[in-house]
Amino acid sequence: MKKKIDGLSRAVGILDKLTQKERHKLFEALSKIDPKLTEKIKEQIITLEDLKFLDKDMFSKVLRRINLPDLGLSLRISSPELLNFIYSNVSKNNQEEINQSFKGPLKPLNVVLEAYGRILKVFREMVEKGDIYINKEEPLV
Image 1 (tube, helix red, strand yellow):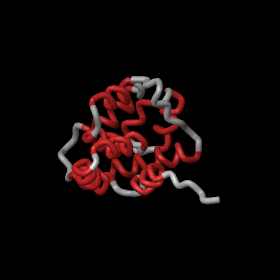
Image 2 (cartoon, helix red, strand yellow):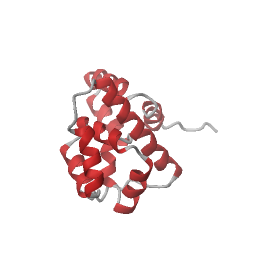
Image 3 (spheres, one colour):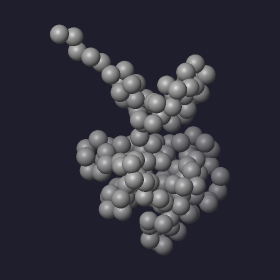
Image 4 (cartoon, rainbow, N blue to C red):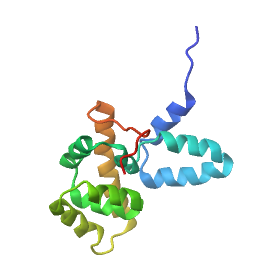
């Protein structure tokens, strides 16, 4: 009996191992060939935007494991919705710490992408271990 392989899941697994910059280039090229497939893959990949699908307890767990200045840098390339979610779910002290790097001096894109990658690595590990789960059915924004 042949084992059925889920190509989409395999592709997502591979893409999860790429850096944000590498993934962006790949998606640009793939979207020219097959825009529908590109969107399907994007929907299944864990991104920083998925933080807004965590409840307050799970979000607090993530905050305890990440570097807040890295989060601030990462927010420079994130959506306004994620920024609003984060600011509405952190203390004033944490907001100030995040703001120092978010509104601070300009940084090269590679520095911002590295910070994004560090945050995303922790976030993905927590999801994979089952410490937290993403519920895209009920966004908490």
